[in-house]
Length: 95
Image 1 (cartoon, rainbow, N blue to C red):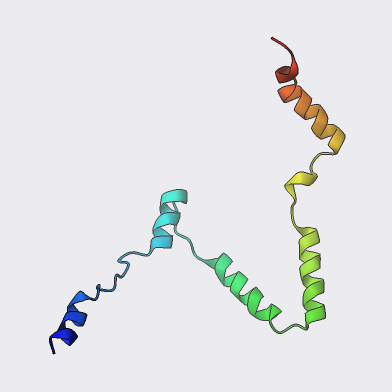
Image 2: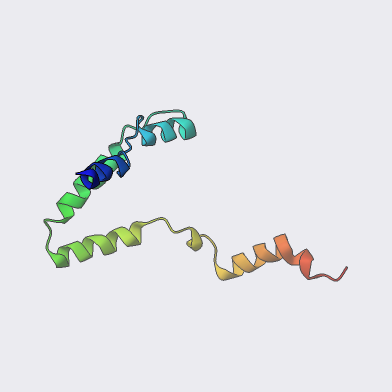
């Protein structure tokens, strides 16, 4: 009987968060509460994609990937080299 009582007392109590952590973080960072609309739309999108066939799903995902904003496509290699030289070319010159 003592062993059973020891197990009960040595178990750590379960911790519960007393505040909505995500909302507090959003308010601290942005000054407004998050209405979670982005999370809801992603959930609905996920559930609707689950009903598609694999071929249709692959087409949808490829189309989305092509439409994404890619930061590295702003400059051509020549433009990038010229900008790099403008910003950091002085480091190649001997002192």
